[in-house]
Image 1 (tube, helix red, strand yellow):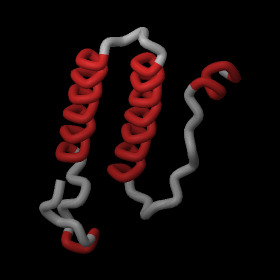
Image 2: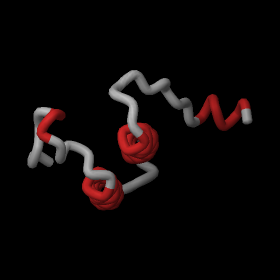
Image 3: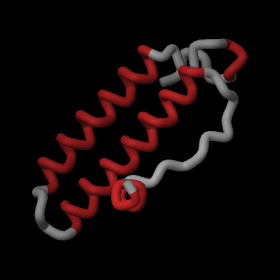
Length: 84
């Protein structure tokens, strides 16, 4: 478990607590980790730029669907209702 914690660190969530926000935060942290790996592979020449772009685009779509499915940002109290 220590190796996984080192390779995939998770930060504590300090925002407004509700299950949806917590799940989205976990999804966002996973997104950031995967983007970092893709960027490093592309920078080192081990992944072509076009493929890196397509992988990032697919990950962005997954994150966007997660946000939509969890109804993040759809409450008027969050200030950015309707923005994606």
